[in-house]
Length: 310
Image (cartoon, rainbow, N blue to C red; front, side, top):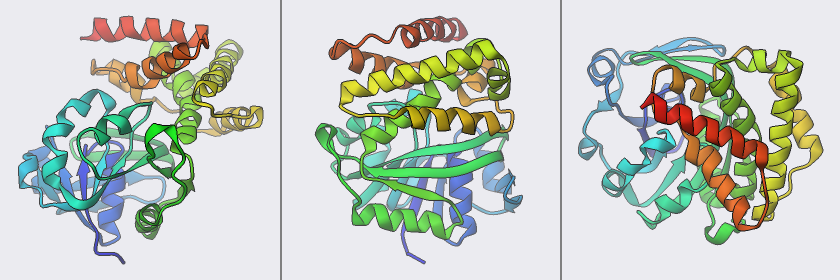
């Protein structure tokens, strides 16, 4: 087992789950916790998982990022709407030769992080059904794999780096499925092909993924939105196949009924990740003269909901 020290920034449905799995496997993990800090500090983390429930009675929990020791890997598992806090956190927590692992949806976050620190950045796209159901309490319903890729400036492909292999091995030693990609930008567009239809429609229609897939009209709309993402990816010179979209729809049809993160954010009147998941891809496409009318309509509807929620 490696001696890498991990920091988790955002101890929620994603960061709480993956960080807990790393600690359970014996890794040195440090959690930045917001509103749940008193409970997590005193009682730890509880994970209800389809792969087996477990509790960590004691965790390294902090409500002040300046108290976290310098770490080899900083896992950013915040919502994209919270990224404005990163300039005040990353420089003090990350070792000089450390790596940022960004577990977020959407486009554009790596570029912003690269403007804050000169370190290596890895993007991680999580295919997981997981919710925070209470303070320090995470419920993992289905799946759990991560697709990781090294960030490369100027939209290039960095290939499979040694850092990527090493960090992915740590996650695999924690019993997590990790797939490696040579092309982060392609991987982000692939994830958008799921996030745009299902996060968007789930929040707009207040429906689970199962309800969307069971209704012929909304299933057809979800597939049409996914196909528009294929067109959007062309703006980044990336190609998604029809087979990829067909497999994505088939996988979603088999998924347990799931309230997406954006739907839960709407329910709890939290800011929606509208710009990261919808706005940024739309702007990239528009720069290349590619129209995405269904996605733009969904974006406008979600912007209304987001503004009303606040």
